[in-house]
Length: 151
Image (cartoon, rainbow, N blue to C red; front, side):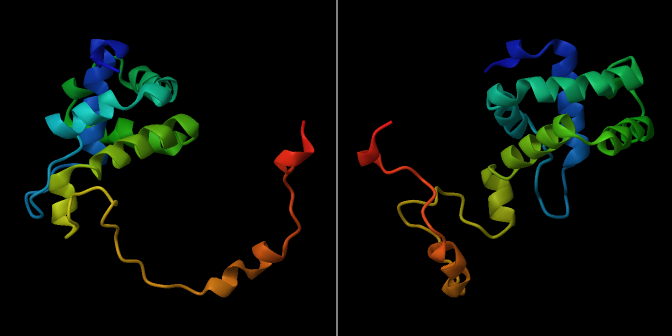
């Protein structure tokens, strides 16, 4: 997916929203979600969620009538608050997608004290939990069809 999937206005509004949802922090030395590297990941990986993201951006467009970036910060925040209050699938998808891409960024992972690397082959240590919590699931009768039974 490239920027061609978004109109220039959608691209600009999405970048502004990303920065409002996750602003940069000098205190923690982390970029915002509107950082060029983070934002490129947001745009590049939204293929399956494009329709929902577009629906959220259309709501933003209907509220401001001009590019979100051209508004004063207080007005941008008002529009973002309206979007959040609207809720629903489009807003949930937009927010989740921005956050997922943000937390994939190596700089963000380092700021959290997590080594930026794939989970495998080294893995990450997990504290052992109470395996007896799975007993009700294990005791359940099978609810799938076995392959030997055919179709």
